[in-house]
Length: 269
Figure 1: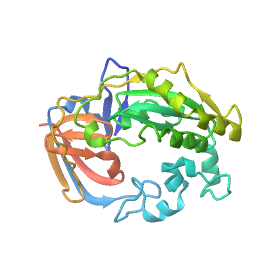
Figure 2: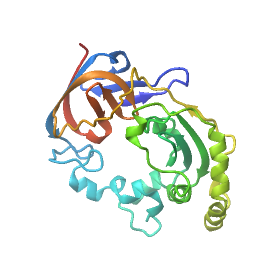
Figure 3: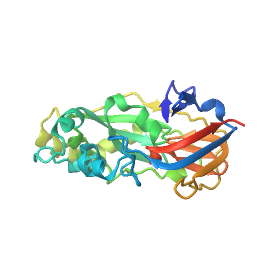
Figure 4: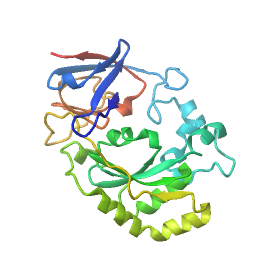
């Protein structure tokens, strides 16, 4: 599922990538949707069939071998590139030894995260955030991860997905939280710049904030998660889309979790 953000005045445009091409989901709001999961799972890297998906779409062999499936991808502060033990140094050089931003997002509360500059605002949309604000530009992914860890002592680094799916968070003054973040990690910033050099971290005091609206007709009063592994035939009326979730009147489905799963889709009444 792909998302396009056209600006704060209009909701995110979602499209589902099918064999027949991309199909816009926004016009389907309020209509019936049927998803039939066949049980077939294909590794998104090597294309082999697998009985179980690891790390959102990989077979076990690729999960254990690929750099993009290593622990440091979800915990960048544990990057071991400098130790010479990266699973794929060329991938690490291309992906991790590059500029990253540390950001604050308003998603079930104020949370901290990291991403590449070109991945905004998609990263915030994936998290169901209604606001996103870059607060620091950092030389490498590892250094961004270290700053994220320091900030996570004061801001959460996890989205409470149930809360996120029950309502939009109120718009807040993100600049105030950025200034609060600067004050709370000032000592950590000094240590990091002393370790990696003064040009390794640039605090962003004038970065532009992104505001996001989602195509939602109504929010559920109670969140019920749908699992195709237990319920392969899913049907319901599509009431909204937020983050990577399809919100039906029968429950919610996290599509990101089922990358590589074969599914037959029927849209509309």
